[in-house]
Image 1 (cartoon, rainbow over the protein chains, first blue to last red):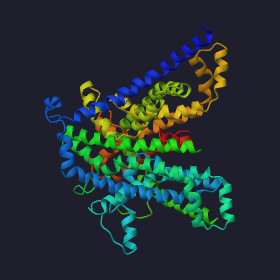
Image 2: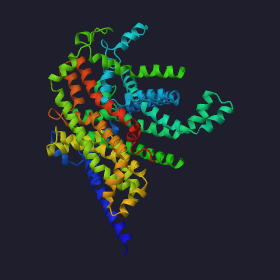
Image 3: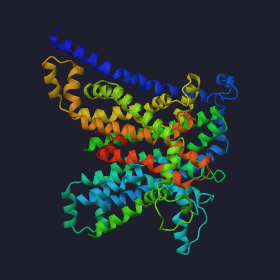
Image 4: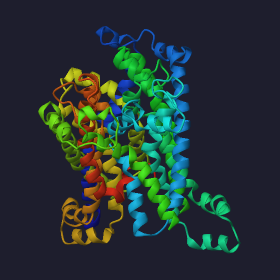
Length: 299
Length: 263
């Protein structure tokens, strides 16, 4: 028994001691609720009837109702629509701006910091800002459109325009994220590659498609996946702008679960939807984990 | 030069929505609907806020965010250090767990927490908010601090061990001071994420523990549309975040990507 193994043991004990409280707390605040959520999703739980908490007579009833009814599937379709529009726009704007701002200068550095503002604003402030912009009478938007000869009515009370209007606000809030990720990747790009392409006479478009894009693709993929997952969670914008309406035109899955649970008190049904959302997020996270790992291995 | 000009123009366009809210917060209420460019700035909207329940909500926000930040750092920092120095088999699984925690939709936490809180009497308390904020803060602290610790050469603490210091003494005296900027940035990110929370506070609080973001929404629902007051409250909620972000901007992405990218 040397002093060395004694020290190794002491070290292991110390590390266990440091890790234990965090793992216990994480288990209590994340693992336990997750298990509880799955359990309540198997019951017709509603606060009106406390006995429903232990009613497991039809464990898959909520899931059947969701998958064979029309309202949940409707919400999933809206969710897909919202996610595709907003992530698509964010990626386009983010990449475009990153290419424009990718210059080494003090000035550009300041401009880049300025572009971060929408992303760090409290989401509720973003929601207020867009509520103001979309409300006729106080918004400068409708006046300006009218002056251009394109008079439009309120966008957020129009069943066709409401979802794209939310997507636009969400794009404004989150394009800086993609921009930042792409900028970080661009700045790591070796200059020899760019030089070589330039000497070979590549134009700006070719430089982007054949030289820059392949280089930033791993970072871009991770950014897109992150934004895709976060777009599923968009809440304050919908709550303040449309409250899921008009009708159910903006009742995306997350919002649908919220309304079913907290407005209609269908806790069991809401739990089932939340459980399916977690499952979906888990699959996407796994993809992020794989891609993030692959990226690290490349470097 | 043309690039600089284009960049500046786009920046102004991107920030215009925020500036519009800013000017609205200084407009006399009677003038907001008229929509003209010129007006006499007034502090009336801010003064109106001081009279109602808004200061109490602001204080709740401050208390919940600060407490959750301190608690997350106290529990998360030692764990991050252990993870950075100790090779064991479950590391990959713990990383995945942290990532899923970061990604999970808040509604999945809210349903079980609401039921547990109504049973424990934690609904509508600042303490209840502090606990649920751990769900995202703790994961973020562990992930970001782990990478800061991993960047510190081990030779430094090994020298302290040889001098007879224990693992945690060496950590406190040698490692932690070297990661002070990272620690500050991580704390700022925790504060911002808690401060920005709307969903949890909306569902888990009513009146006593109502936070500032929820109070703003109540201006919309109960007091009619007092746009000036709403704009002023929005600016006040935004201010701490802008200030803090400026100091932590270099670490922003690392915190937001917690769990996503391995170094």
